[in-house]
Image 1: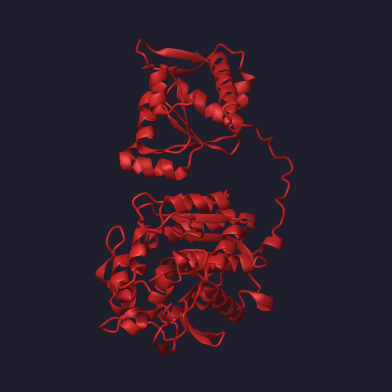
Image 2: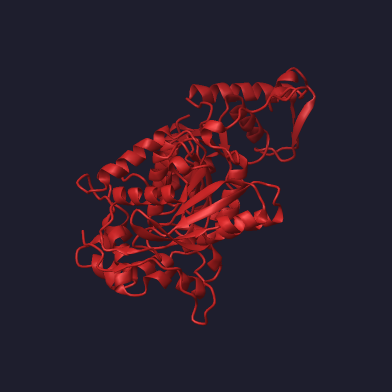
Length: 491
């Protein structure tokens, strides 16, 4: 692995050609901090947040990937402050977004930095900032992207005493053995290309910035490129690519494996904001993350890609999620148990009325155009209740359990109603995808939801088969054996 050639101190971001700030970046957020013997540039909204008078819920620790820098997090910095200014009575989040060493405007160290070194680097910085160690006073939620997702999750596992949750945009923590890494990374690592593509020219940087949907505004593109003007300033980009663990012999492989394994024991709120149009981190990597963190929430953004932070308002999604999932101002150990509510109305299951009226012949729904033709069809409570019980028993016999995901490819009507209530009875999660997404968009949305079972009419099951959707396929109608085999239908 080649070492970065230049040693240079940390600086604050440069301005535009006329002295104006970089688009969306408040110069007041920039700080240079010394930690672990090195100079770090970072964005910190703490001072501005204190001026609003809003109570501090905690800190969002943001870690960029390769080849971006803390500029990637300008929107969540701005949105968190805007919310605090609008309503200073509500807890607000401080944002600390770092430039990793040899990246952005942080120090060029002249040392090749592997994943374990970068974890130690970030630990030294957060200890210095009082976000970890004996000086820590508020909870931390991590937010990472690309290789910064790995670094942020590794830091999270080391600092569970202050950790309140984790968030990540397109990233990965595991590469299946025997499966090649994504082709853009294979190309960037190729002998004879690696140095020229990543350091000698801005090729890797330009290619990454071209992954935005829609294309970046030219001023924003220039802002992302600002710290990397000149080959010596891009040595860290080369080093990051070289640090991709392509096999067990790589010096970062064991550390990456320990992070991937450690996530299985992380019982804290987790959010993934995902852009599926990503040639680097496909849905395969999202599925792996969800297998390790099955309780995680996913905010999937159809049409967005690798630079989902530029393609979509991820900041609002992340802050709304924090307000909903993370108790403001409390570390995990200090979270209070939910208070009992005296005199509250008893909770009624959604299917309670169906049980109460199971012997009623009163109408519950009318199909104006039932499948198969004919006039309107009236369905009674008795018939619907019986059908729900039968379907639930059948799905349960096929192995459907509480928490499993079911994609329903059934048109609106009595069958869909019965299926919905049957899934509810079992506790399964119904996956709904908008047909307006089109075939490709619908395919990405359903595949990304990872259904355990697909229940549908023959046309829907044919689409599922053609697009290779995961999940056992169940037909709502009886099919001839050759048709069932052709559609891959289990029942």
